[in-house]
Amino acid sequence: MRSREIATFWRYIAGSLDRLVGILDGLGEQELNWCPPAEATNSLYTLAFHTLANAEENILGTLCGQPTERHREDEFTRCVTQATSLQDHWRDLRIRLEVALSALPSTELDAARTHPRRGQVEGRDILIIVARHAAEHLGQAELTRDLMNAASRKESPR
Image 1 (spheres, helix red, strand yellow):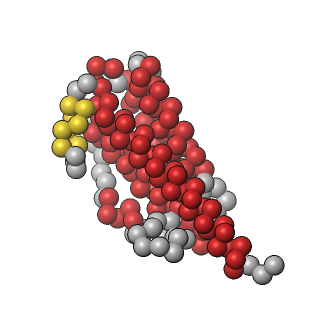
Image 2: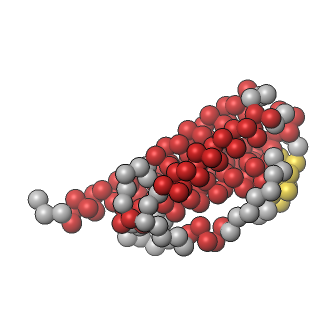
């Protein structure tokens, strides 16, 4: 990467996204789509899918000016049978994000961009938004996984 600062942001963003997608390993349909018994919660798959879409839109689209297409509302309505397509998507997206950030000059961190929902945002703030968003949803996914595991232990006869 051209910039140590960008490399640091990328390390934290990629680490959170790697862990988030990793939570899906070995899960079946019921586990991927399970939601905690509380209002406005999301499944593990939804959390991962939404968080990857956020990173793609913000880094590739807003920060790096590449064309992206996102339907944010649809991210919360998906039910899936397996995680392999999302895991494959992450492998491809991870490379695309790293390549784009590697080519980004550090001067672009101070330049303003027009964000689709936030208005004018500096490049550095975009990376903060993505890092924070990924870490928040990683925490939610870890808690969701723990709640799902606890619920399945209650349902299983001992």
